[in-house]
Amino acid sequence: MLQKEFSFIEAHLSHINEESLNISKANVGWHLDHVLKVINVVSEALKNSNPEEYKRKFNRLRFVIFALGFFPRGKAKSPKRVLPPEIILQTAIENQLKVAIQNLEAIQSLNEHSNFTHPLFQQLNKKQTLKFLKLHTKHHLNIVKDILK
Image 1 (cartoon, helix red, strand yellow):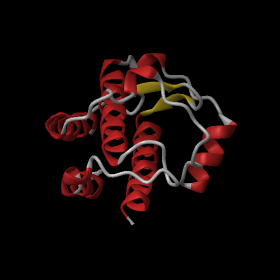
Image 2 (cartoon, rainbow, N blue to C red; image 1 turned 180 degrees about the horizontal axis):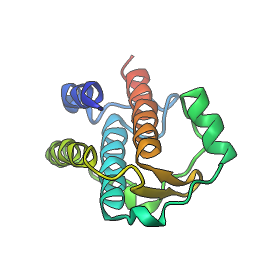
Image 3 (cartoon, one colour; image 1 turned 45 degrees about the vertical axis):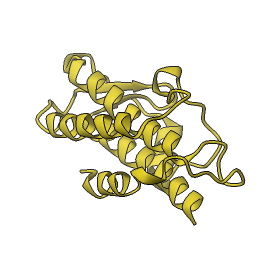
């Protein structure tokens, strides 16, 4: 599902210390680490969820963002559990990438009502969660591309 994005991450590991403060306060490594932490934390939540607890509910913000197909920059704040450490090592990103690939493979076989609760979008089913992960990853990789320009 995110093969192209994973290939991009792998191809840009050597640039983790590059930055452009007029694009982002964070360097390339921060964005790559964050994206992988989100994929892995969300994947675990989805795998550990109870599909019977899923309740379909309309969320206006989710509807708008998903319809637009992108996140506006600089509007959201990441939860602490998905923030990168002060020092980001290339090996740590490589290890998280391996786990992320395995997690996305494991998600494919989950029940459609497996769910994850996002702080703003609220409860997402498997399909919505995968869309969120795609949009979130593309958002940060676009920032990386702009930093590297």
